[in-house]
Image 1 (cartoon, helix red, strand yellow):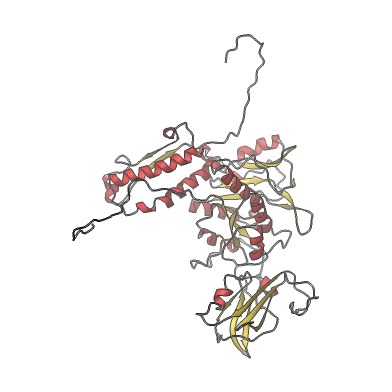
Image 2 (tube, rainbow, N blue to C red):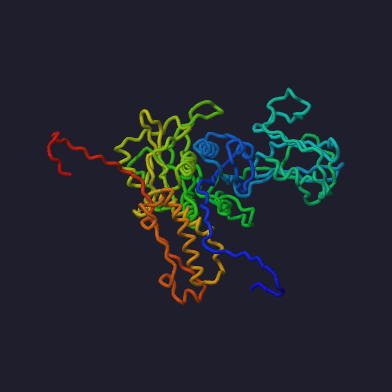
Length: 509
């Protein structure tokens, strides 16, 4: 309570009425897969060029993540997090910078893998003081290491060159190497490692980092999930994506090829309840009769797409068969921005797709659609389009993607927008304020076209009073709100009934 101890005018601020609830983003994707290089702790990228700067480009016919990410941005995506997958226990390349013959500092690749052994560094005196660190990366290692600064004719040229000049070892300096290199470089980090003196290094000349390796054997489920790194802020793989609250959809290209990965993605979404999984059919799934993903994965938190699509490989200039999920995630994002999360992400053109693995007929889709398989089809004059909007759920209430994603949006927005309620006095005044807050938010959602009804009373209700809570609930600190919403459903089957009648005669409807 305020104190009034002397005569005067007192100005006090207080809050009344509802508090605004901001709708959360629904268009941020989380990608999981192999990349050419880069960190293994999830990193956000905001464009295809940004992805190439941090994670490299295309690097193998069966490495589909770069194609998925480019398809995401080509189709309207704006932000995504990349969870780079490597073999558990893979080595990270590093090198000791020298002060004379003693170790001064350690330079290390930003992520595990043999790609780090194609990084070379060179140390020289800084232009105005300190030291200058030059970093060179080759996608394909040259036959013999050379200095790109002095040997301008040698081939191949480095794919990436980074130069950091006037680096200082004094922590108070604005040119301190930790500030200017770590987090700025897409290739290396610079630290004072065990046995390092921390002095300004004077060498070496151009030298490769050493010790990086890809591990032994093919990738398995454990390499995607990564339970071995459980320190906050340093988690990797699927567990690393779980730390990123902004993610609203997850995708791993060709997940069917890794035993258990599809189930892990679905479990990830069902556990967190704030994201949606996109699943591809396996490559070469030509047998329509045996294509029934719902039989093994009945869930309302995932959608299944078939068949694969063909895109133009920019590096080779030929058509490349790739899984469609990255393009689908981009279509989700594009639909969310242009129309809203309540709009089904279907009847949309697939940008970047030039052909399909299989041409799907209406008769074949008649079999697949009830099984929860969303087909991608070619229509003459209209191009390649997504022609399905169903989840993998057998529950009729949750069979449409837009309904499930709308509820994710509502639940996440309400959760984040009502945190101020916690520890407030649990009385009628609070109940009225919470009800008004939710009513204003849901009214805005209804006006955006996400809910049914010609007026708000037909679209939703909010109830918070003695009928939703007992005295025992109140005594135990529980505030219980009952919310009902009527989501819009897509017009999946458009039926025109046409009859012939004699002009001028009486017609009975």
